Amino acid sequence: MSQQPKIFVTRKLPLAVERRLAKNYQCDFNTTDRLYTQDELVDRSVDNEAILCCHTEQLDADTMARLPEEIKIIANFSVGVDHCNLEAAANKGIVVTNTPDVLSDSTAEIAILCMLGAARRATEGSNLVRNDQWHDWSPTFMLGKQITGKRFGIIGMGRVGQVTAKRARGFDMEIHYHNRNRLDPSLEHGAIYHDSLESLIASSDVLSIHCPNNPDSVGLLNAERISHLPDGAIVVNTARGTVVDDEALIAALKNGKVGAAGLDVFNNEPSEIHPAYRELDNVFVLPHLGSATEQTRDAMGFRALDNLDAFFRGEAPGDRVA
Ligand code: DGY
Image 1 (spheres, rainbow, N blue to C red):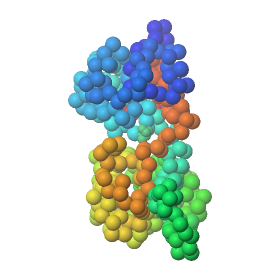
Image 2 (tube, helix red, strand yellow):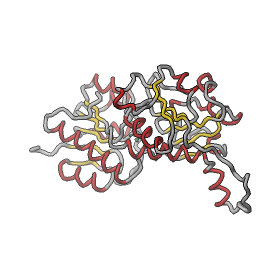
Image 3 (cartoon, rainbow, N blue to C red):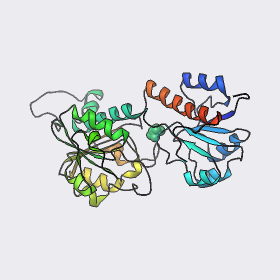
Image 4 (cartoon, rainbow, N blue to C red):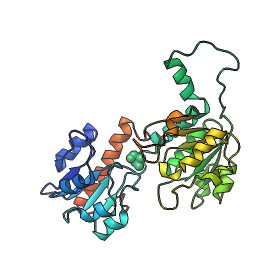
């Protein structure tokens, strides 16, 4: 690269990633990590050729249309690209990339944590200890659900779904899944494919969501589908909040149809999530931590940079989504 391309970096990134960025690009860093408004995103993009952003930046059709003509590529620091209107990007000739693969392990870990936290009543237990309300132990005290050997149902058997299945097998769980397309048998490792969501749901003692947010998946786990779950099943969501109909899940958590839920993602996160999720004891919640390890966040940044480097070398970025 003869002249260093100019990049607008919307959030504070891990140090190692910012160092590599600074070596090869002229960067407009976000040193305070303040979340920019859509107007600010447009304004700060002026004079830059690329944007390196996260899922927190809402690049909807209108914002995308207002981006300056100089912006040639948006390199996402995320695997999900539901915050980017890809059609609007394509209309402007903007290349969009994401960071698949590198966060599958860490997200699968969080899915297992959500399953265990929900099954073994981690919210209640933790609150008892922290609030100094734990005064006894007895054989019937705080009994949870054992997941060993139970059926683990996966909606969306992509990269994260497959790694999560592998981890769940460590608990001798029987893996069931539904996916747009059945996996090649060599990738199934004995997992049982269901060609309908309803059939998968009816076979899931734990139902774990791993599909992307798109028009087909919004509100996918609704009251009708929840009615097919075995009584007392556990719901886990580490994908996107939009896949769940909150009112339906909360009603089921209240009446016991769903025994517990472990949720890392929410509709209207972070600040306007459904208040019932803060109140229900049978919900184990985390603040969108799926990819939140140093190793994974570095890997996401390097993957985004590999895409940028390829683009500015005149090559096709490996993870182009638009
Ligand atoms: C992703 O990569 O999509 C994660 O949700 C974090 O942004």
